[in-house]
Image 1 (tube, rainbow, N blue to C red):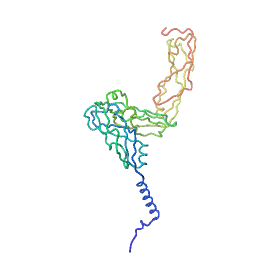
Image 2 (cartoon, helix red, strand yellow; image 1 turned 180 degrees about the vertical axis):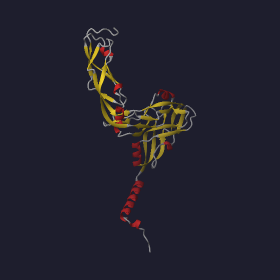
Image 3 (cartoon, rainbow, N blue to C red; image 1 turned 90 degrees about the vertical axis):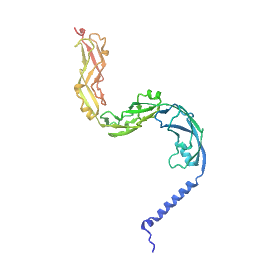
Image 4 (cartoon, one colour; image 1 turned 90 degrees about the horizontal axis):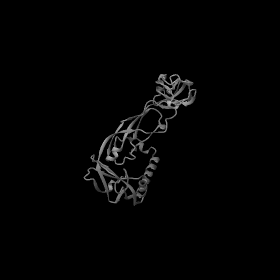
Length: 322
């Protein structure tokens, strides 16, 4: 007596429908017409494995045409997505080299049913020059602002902070830093680490290692703290008691991470008037002037409820030192 496993007959109608659909899709793909089409403006990229040399300037020509054979749909998809012809150079024999192009250097992607019939032109000229290498600082860029409820509790850290760059002498020597792709502050939701890639704009022919770095971010809830009674100092060579400030003290409102605000000592915070704003004051004259505040740690911002003060010079004030 024949025995049919229960797993084979369970939901047999659904399984049979799925099998039929798979066969239909396979038949459609196989029956899709194949044709040959030309795709132009394919960039030529040179990968130099010989560490003593680097490509100099642009490949001549920098773009080629390729003749593809395959289904119309795949050719259209490749044309839209774009591709490159990547030349692998394992050994540099001379500064000026004519390279014969191979069809298998065209990047078609895994699983592609396309084939390359021809490449035009059939050769390109590549110029090389000795490579130089040096260590360059890595520079972080940010865009936007943190969400209003958050504040940085420490400077954003980049690891490593130096990159090794190798390439043409004029390009490498001109670099004062290597830029990372911008970090969007508005997307940060809490403390953590992210991976950022090196921005390759303007670095054609330059190899940068590492290509990505780790960026550490530490944030806390944003808070406010008010410091009261910060004395405003004003000195301009009129004598020690020649100038009076009204009001004598001001309030300062700090904004930032909780730990940074808690660490601020009011005795380290000073307000003062730039002496240049008080030059040539006549006896008895008064001026409304702005003032500065010092002693606020980095990553902490401040608001000044009072933006200016009045400075008065005493009548008949003797010069300083008399």
